[in-house]
Amino acid sequence: MVENAERRGESRSASFTLPPMVLESLHAGRELGEEMTRLTDVQNIKQKGGAISAFTQGQLTRSSVSWP
Image (cartoon, rainbow, N blue to C red; front, side, top):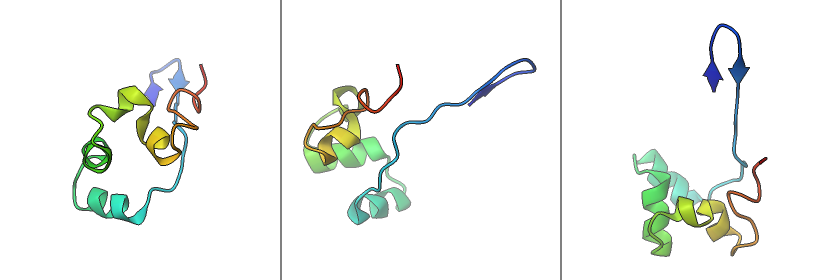
């Protein structure tokens, strides 16, 4: 969210349910990016379609589910 006295803007990416094993890692304090690297062996996955791409076998990407 970006806000000042004259304007307010909000943004959000796609929402989807993460697998329980990923949620457990996040609750343990790991970052989503590092957990996705551990699971997929893809470094910097957010630049390569994001977690949503990995979970959908490339059918969806961070870009494809966002407004331009």
